[in-house]
Amino acid sequence: MDDEPDVRLLLRVQLEQAGFEISGEAGDGREAIERIAQLRPQLVLMDLTMPNLGGIEATRIIHEDYPDVHVIILSMHKHEDYVIAALRAGAAGYIHKGSSPQEIEWGIASVTSGRPFLSPVVLQPAVETYLAGATEQDVGAFDQLTSRQRQILQLVVEGRSSKEVAQTLNMGVRTIDAHRATIMARLGVHNLPGLVRYAIRHGLISADE
Picture 1 (spheres, rainbow, N blue to C red):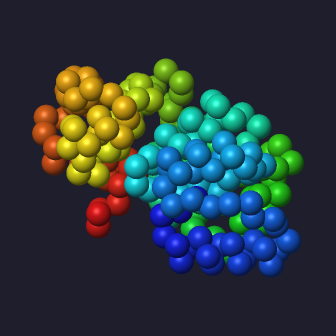
Picture 2: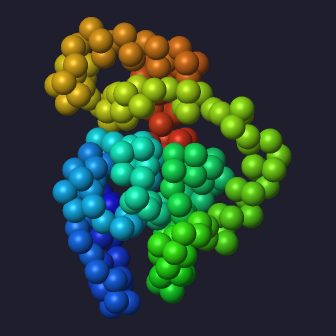
């Protein structure tokens, strides 16, 4: 699941050459959820930064609604904050996009056999951060948002108006505005540019969007 068709094509070719069967692909988080509901794959390779619904929230939904589907995050982000957020959301693995095809194959084999897998380039910083105090009691403000609020945040920072967000999520405009105010208060952000900066730091959108 990646919003770049060229990346999906390259990955498909690599995995098919390695003997894996590809049941489907998607270009954004919402489409990914729909495809998983239809296809029920054994494993999903998920990018972090995607439109409509980011990889972290999509992973959280998959983990809750389809616990038999394993999710591996395949991302260019290697900062420990992203790794820990992905694992908290239910990801079974995290592979850096700069990894070799062989490492991706190892990760898939590990996760499908029930063992978590993290690329070495992201493993050590994540472990150090976790041991330094990143426990269940030490959750960030983003983790304290509800699933619906995280979805609203994603759409807002993509530039959607309250009306557009309401139509996408089948909610009332006033309800969206109320959620938006709550989101800003919980994140300690007071305007849209601040929300966008927050979203970039947490991998919801990329800096060039």
